[in-house]
Length: 436
Image (cartoon, rainbow, N blue to C red; front, side, top):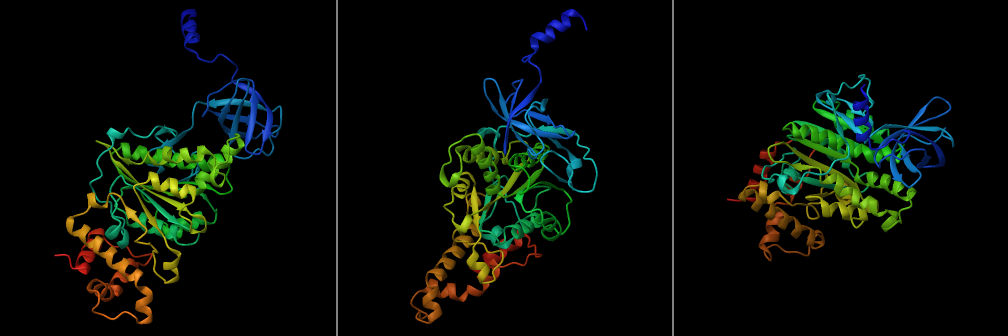
């Protein structure tokens, strides 16, 4: 290399400090290092004395030191171990080779199919698309579930939330949507779930069919950083296929575990705990992820379903409340309906889709509105009807609701293996409600 070329290269270099340092302090979720100053979001690795390495991401930079959160755990690290700079920013493999694969947030395969031959790498942390680049949501997105297609109609590019307590049936409904949806590509992020549930979800809910599907998995025993960035990695994969013109289904289970991971990281950084111990960063992180879904002009779309675990079935939980304010609709699962044997247990009166009017015909909208009204009348007068205090003839609308109670209940119920065409569901609803 000539002296002139070397001089030009030195002038372009932003950081001439050594790219390695030593560990000075170790906390359960944080490692502090002196010796060089990287940027927030850079990837570093600690070289342990036993020959193993500990990858991490820089989350804190001070004047003379920085702190990184490990992707694994800090066991085996000690003060004085050397830390090396790896790369600027986290990236994730993307491409057609990912279809049918199960990966961790670092892009390592969790199945037995060998190395992932990705065609490119995409940055994990990117800004959502600009508001005026978003396309108008005017096309229906069928999911094969009667109560959703008929009463909570979704559009291509919509962001929906599935809110439920533990054991109510979120995973079962997720499997029904994945199998019955009209998306050409499906990206699923399983964040913070029990390890036992991963093979169960693949073999039971997906029936072992991973065609056109990518799974990104970070289980509950993974580090908080893995659980946090697992969601962003999956979204980067969905964005890649959206940019190729595909209509992508993005499904994440669950937002609550994702927020809990950020709570652990934020508290380790010294953030003040607010409602239920969540630091401010946990709430600001939700729109950074959720707003990346949507429909983009002259490209494809990402239709997203985010499950939210509500503790004690309390919908005023801070994560549930914040999620509802960001999403374009919410599907609430009811434990009461499971007690009555109605699956999927969707509480129609507490659920809503904010784009259903824009993607449905006039007859469909009228039928869905009438269904809600009759269903609400039945709920309000349930006690009177059961004890026999109501006599027919006093309220014509309640009489009609009682006549159609059985058919309405049958419309809301659906077997797990049953997939119903969306147009068939809509036609059945219109005929049941007798819309001219």
